[in-house]
Image 1 (cartoon, rainbow, N blue to C red):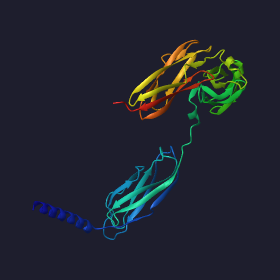
Image 2 (cartoon, one colour):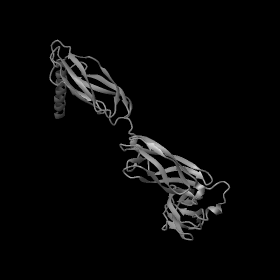
Image 3 (cartoon, one colour):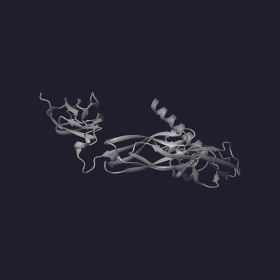
Image 4 (tube, rainbow, N blue to C red):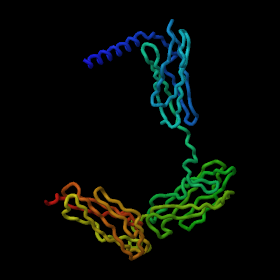
Length: 365
């Protein structure tokens, strides 16, 4: 009985609300336009705005704008909030901020709710966002006095020992006066095409040339040089050339190792045999430096399901020995293979791979 009374009261309330809505006097709204095109918007220029104009086209009922919503929060609406008499006019101001937005075409919706039929009306703003011009100095991260460089070191790439490699070094002059780059102070394997005079606020470059045959190192090499200028904020600039020196096709590997490190591994294949599922097994693999230079282990990595620890001794003098520990997790089932990589400064073996295999089987009960 009580439930029936509650249902009856609820029904009466809903019916009354619907009748009240039906009895609410409806007005009329007429916009001057439903879409506005901003055309091209420049990033970094602040907010852009446009006001949609409308009038109350009803003869008797005041027009009330109840709410205005925008898509994505990209637009900020300001609108006439007091009732607008018949024949009166109002506005909806839409602001759009292109900063932080992806460049290209855009279209945003503005929904206007009012005491009209229909209850809501759609407006649109659209346009094209032009990317902010890139600051030329943004790519120049290294500064020395009035001059800026993309980096302190210029990487010329890979080069065979018997070849020559060159690269342009970009320079930005931030001084109020011209700066001349006169020459470089460097060993004979580096030379530069100078002088070059750079006007104030301008970007230029000079060519630096690397002759790897005139130095003895292989692999990744870092070669310092000094740029001589008339920069009033400091005439001498400390810079570097980096290169990956490879052995020439007809070069004897034994000659390479006369002055460089050489890594040798105890083995490059290890089988754990049968591994119970869920168990973890490990092994140690020894390596040593049989070359004449200092051997450095720069990093290690492994494939999924296998881990390798960095060796306790990462720097090995000629004749020194160290080891890596490799752990294998018995997951899944059946025959499995994994790989481990060791990265070094050995000029002919910068990356070595060790292969691991195991036969993972369920534990015996």
